[in-house]
Length: 138
Image 1 (cartoon, one colour):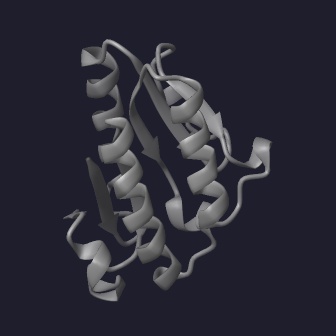
Image 2: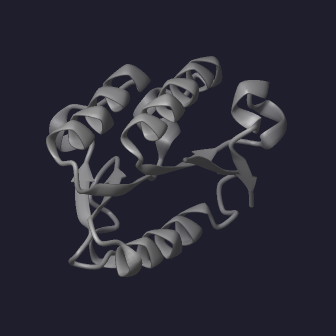
Image 3: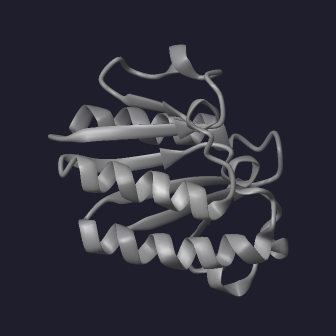
């Protein structure tokens, strides 16, 4: 299942994403992964959550981010949840490319049975229609 938390800067996306991650970590019998652009949220996560820093691995662009997530899922069948903070900063900021990324990621999440939650800084009126099916607005 894919979920997109969307809202302008300062609407509480990061707080909500951290709450969802904490709940998933507590209830999961597998691995919960939290991907962020840099290491700013290190101390906000449980030690049980696998923190992955996109910058450390040279992940930039939606194609690269998709490969990063797919690689994690293929390397570890115990991954149950993936949370991505600052999706637009990592992906490059193109809303049209976001739509293609979301559709591809939705297929992957269903194929490998992993819950994926993305945090997107944008107004819901700005995103393409393909993305709106996955949106939870803050």
